[in-house]
Length: 117
Image (cartoon, rainbow, N blue to C red; front, side, top):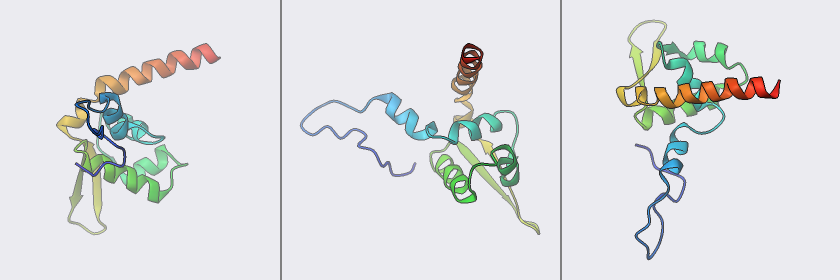
């Protein structure tokens, strides 16, 4: 797991722990991670697939987001030894446990889109 930027669990002179939602949002929160995870639910994706799916994301940001998801144990990066190099991203078993959450987010988004017209 990667080093966290937030103050997870930092409550001096207290037995309190950080909110579990804070941990969850640190792993899947932000503008791009949920989208990337959603598109990996059913099949492996290559870097170029993500660039087509999310044309507004920069190459640097895509690399950073995938790297963080990999460091958090949610995404597996498979490098094939061939020319040109081939890299595929897929959800780990732990990453698959996010499927119900991602699908609920999808359903909520559809309802919200209908409500907003």
